[in-house]
Image: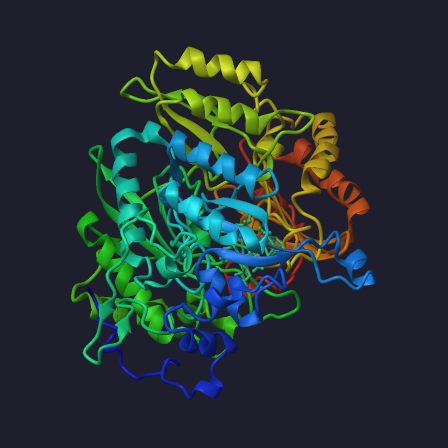
Length: 599
Ligand code: SRM
Ligand code: SF4
């Protein structure tokens, strides 16, 4: 262990953990009072008089992987009938590296049917989400998730979240190593509190369920329970880690707090470039908040990687801002103090120096669809799942189809970081059977769409997300249909352009690195950003503020035409709009709001 937080070996210099409690953000007070995330959740779950939990409990529930929500489509009507909002819970299931067995898929499918809204949502962080679970079913649903040997602890909250990893088993031995690393980091940084088991993993009679190994409480010198890496107050804010395998940047490494870029020399992973300080969230009109790209901190060997994660987490734990939550992510800690300061702190805790950055190259950040064969002769099929929503509808019976596939599949499923799904590790013998099901359910050509759609991501937004200012998942598919006709007129149907939409500026679809992005401003209104890097390595820039949805196609049409007619060979849309002066390139997150246009 790098740093024993029970003794808090961090220096006192400029860190807010020891600030007077009244100066800290409300969430810090809630964490301290919660006794390692227990709070009053057990009592409140037993209260059947209301479908909701208290505000403080809501904050703690996040650490357990669930959010209280209400159906926003019904809000007005229920208010007018003097009814409490239609409360329900979203549950996020951690799937480190995105690997799920067919059996787990079937169990997720059962949960979607029995307790949620009949859909499985694949998220932008390789996780499963369920929406619409009512309070009286919450504990039972958590039980069932754990019976599948997946869990929800630390899927949300001020801790390290689901660790993402390139899901392509066709990278064979490299993939096995990177997935093992993401599991090792995930396990190491999972909270050790016993609260999760106490609250969720007991049966009706209060007997403990033997689903996963219950952590032994870690008792300190004073006889109290301890949380060895995080301490009582966990992290100042959420923390996100990814592992990328070049040339694919499918995990969008630059958007995350901490990243590992596999460096492959002589066909071996010799180590990782370590990136820090990425993040997407900002607030409209608040220039002190901004998206920021991660930077390379240095290089570590595979054996050092877990210790590096712990050291970085511990520096953020001690120096991240605990007073202003909007300034609490690692990106601001690094921006305020500088990368060199940060490296010194990390190396001090590690007791060794990081190596020099090694060369690498990314060439895309989306998914690659259809069948690929690996060097062991196994096959992998990536399906395009529009915005990650697995459901049966008039177009396709995707849920039923995937259930049928899971029933006979002997390999595994891989959730991608772009809300898609890979049916992975299909043996050559089994491939015809899987293909027959893909054909039967007419999902054999999910990727037979415009390259714009295949490179699109929308966040959930309405009706479940409490923070949404505008539609996203329910609107982007239709907008793309309209844009597809413009692309067809210009002969660009097969040209990949990244397009992303979010219902608010929090950035859940990682919009600020897309070549075209829409960020909700209000009902039917969006900020339009242009000029992100095709491989996710450059922030975009505001092109139009608050345009109404009906203006979008006409605003983009002339730019798309210009691109079709005047692009240079191989020139990406994001690079073109900068060269032609539609927007100025954003060199750094701090300049994100500086809306300078060239003459
Ligand atoms: Fe997110 C909050 C959905 C990935 C940045 N995000 C939320 C909440 C929980 C709203 C809330 O706090 O009440 C949304 C729930 C909506 C719903 O009904 O399901 C929500 N975020 C999502 C998902 C489901 C979007 C999706 O359509 O796939 C993604 C779940 C990922 C997962 O499995 O863990 C999701 N969120 C992201 C990402 C992308 C990523 O991590 O790769 C980001 C940007 C990266 C980053 O963190 O900087 C992201 N979500 C946020 C933020 C802004 C954080 C910030 O630093 O400002 C919030 C708001 C907050 O934390 O206060 C937020
Ligand atoms: Fe909700 Fe905003 Fe995230 Fe979309 S970006 S899911 S609207 S918090």
